[in-house]
Image: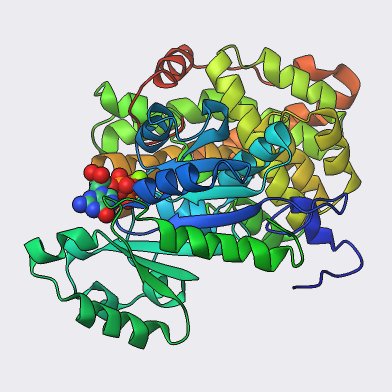
Length: 231
Length: 224
Ligand SMILES: Nc1nc2c(ncn2[C@@H]2O[C@H](COP(=O)(O)OP(=O)(O)OP(=O)(O)O)[C@@H](O)[C@H]2O)c(=O)[nH]1
Ligand SMILES: [Mg+2]
């Protein structure tokens, strides 16, 4: 586990992705979900909430581009009580809000933490964006990049920071592969080449428990953070 | 004063949340009021001499070291629309975060402690300017520039305006910006003796009304 400095550094007054609160207690693990429009970010977040909510105290921050649609969807689907879902507005630039100016997202995260303490996990969904959109390390502990097979099997080969550097790459909608003529083996080979030792998983969220590979990865992230904890 | 500190503070990339706000531009575009470069210039001129002047007075006064909590109350008095008060306080919280990381100081800590829901953004801007070693006039300049720079950027995004023309609009307004900043800074120089009532209290009723309406839109690109 990462050992923190014994003294509080001045920049820690910003409460960015420091693993502890100012009082020394652990704050919730923050995981960002990015990726192109329509790849299944909201569906993944919703499925994770359903799978993990009995074991973990979870909250979600959505970053919609010009509506509150993702937040509204999550509330409508009742994957979490409404007070656990917050929406951030991004002024036509979703990547700015998760990377260059994270102040609104940090606000949302901290307000959820204050209102719902103790939280185990905060899932932050980016607005659908391009292949270069990544989360600032000041905002999240880990980031997941979600693409889907229907957008073309050449996306892993194209690469870009989302594909190559995200902590987990999710290739979603594998159920559609036969209909769009996509070669999943080639996608896997390209993903392995682009990501070296970093993990990637294939999912189909239409299948029962289809989010399991992502849920297992999230559970591992939590376990790595609290070695010895039983959760 | 450090000219570089002023550039950092006034830079649109300063991570204080401004990029998600249009300063009333989204509502103005939707109503057809702003639709080209000329109407962008008219909008910016109007905003500068009203909301911009008022914000600059508050920022300049805060930069003199005057009681920031009293200035925050004065900002409330000068912001009649509830939606715009909420926006000003939210942006104040975001600027507070960025400023405390950039120029940590007791003045910012004090203000944050006494206004946990967020002080008005221009007041934070002024206290941050002081922490950065800037003058009241510098703080006024940062405030007036922001009052037109944000809407101009938003117009480029909303109308697909030519970005060169939008930038030229700002350059043409430079003398006006300087004059408004000087007026705000002059008023701030008198606040220690005469109190907050000497600070500008110009308002733009249409910005207040459309700001309130915009906050209720179900679908929008900008937060304000
Ligand atoms: N067939 C199939 N459809 C899926 C799968 N996952 C998501 N979808 C559908 O794909 C569409 C888009 O999914 P979302 O979860 O809204 O995608 P998103 O990435 O959040 O989209 P934006 O937030 O708009 O960028 C929805 O209609 C989902 O039901 C999948 O595994 N298989
Ligand atoms: Mg979504």
